[in-house]
Image (cartoon, rainbow, N blue to C red; front, top):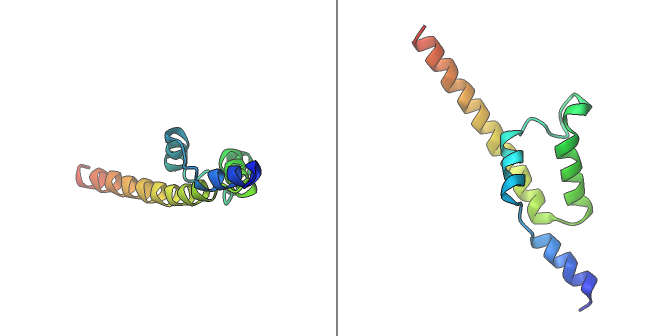
Amino acid sequence: MDLEEENRRKRAKATLSKMESLEFFILPFITPRARHKSLDDFSESQLDRFKKYGYDTKLKQANQLIIFGIIFWIGLAAIIGYLAIKFS
């Protein structure tokens, strides 16, 4: 097995770092689907890099964290809205 093939397998199995995970979870709305191009440079470049270099596990984790982040922010907004109505 040559070195290039070994590196390709390692890239496919690499996982997101804690900082990368946090960025995708906390900032889920800053994605390539955003309407304002200047807002999505981080995640778009990261997701494109994951696709280009074969980081399959990182790409899958990033997409899951984006979904979990959206659910988190919607839930947080619902709780705040409920509390605002209840205590006003």
